[in-house]
Amino acid sequence: MEKEEMQRTAMFSCRTRMKSTIASIRVSILFVVSMYTKFCEETTLHGLKHTVARNFHFIERLLWLILTSLAFTGAVYCALSQLTRYNSEPVVVYLQRDYRRWAFSFPAVTACFLERSDQEKTKGVIRRIWNITEDSDPEKFQYYQEFVDLISDVSFRENLQNFWKYQNDESLKGVDLLQLAIDVHPDVILNVSVSHQLEILWVPVMTEEGLCMTFNSVYSQYQQVGDVTARPGLMTCHYHSEFCFVRIDAMNRGVRVVEIEADGRIKNLRPEQRRCQYPDEWLADSIKFFCVKLTLNESPEKQLHVVNLRDEIQDGEVCDSDGMACIGRNVEILVNLPKNLAKCPCAPQCAELNYYSHTKKIVVR
Image 1: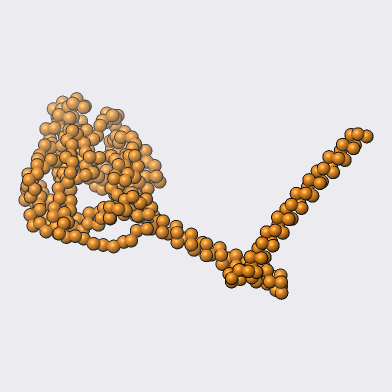
Image 2: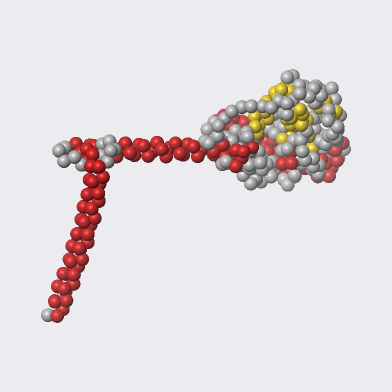
């Protein structure tokens, strides 16, 4: 009996609590409705009075409520869109140039020999690595000599397809191809005269055209090979100067300079806001520089997976003869990647300097 009485008491208590909660919710809703009705009756905002007008039909009041809600939502959306646009593009674009003080950086000069293998050095390298001389085994010597010549004259667009015949040669496994190209490179120093009293230091660098030499290049520190280190600082020229030149032997080439540089104050903005990147803003830990060409190369890298391919400025396995043969088989794909992937995001540079040659290409033999 006592047990049944306790159950009835518990059920009564639960019902009482539920009724109390429902009543509290009703009171809160009625309070909100009354406050909304009072506000709409007294406000001057157009449309809100019609949502609580008692002489209107319910459907008409509902339509006015929907219309006013959409109007307020659209106004808030437009305001937030303008605020987002201001935060993302707070830069005003204008062009100006102080020609009296304009001193631009002289273009980097890169020289690549047409014949990049010294015959005597080639003989020494073949004897040291494969223990073969021209007298001991002429056929094998000719085979390795062609391989060394191919390595020294390697070009991204010309002779990579010729590596196929060396891809299964076990005697070429473990050979450092970069060091091989350095060891046979001729020790020819180009005679250079400069308008500035500077000592020209040629820095050997590995490019897409093979082993070359350069000076007055900032990026050479990431491409250089060997023990030669580029000097800091660049050669500059004043816009009105008529004596700013670099003459290499008998070669003479005029250039026209176009420089676009953003105001230094925008560097504090995010790259998304200023819509450009500075050269010292790295694309990745392995690409310690920024330029448009590297951005185009970075996106295809994520979509192309070829074994043993490695750019000299990116992480990966060092290429051997098999890797070079693999590149040779896919060279057309690699060359056409930027065209096929035209949607790669590529921000312009905040400091860009373009040089346009006034003369045709000159080959010095």
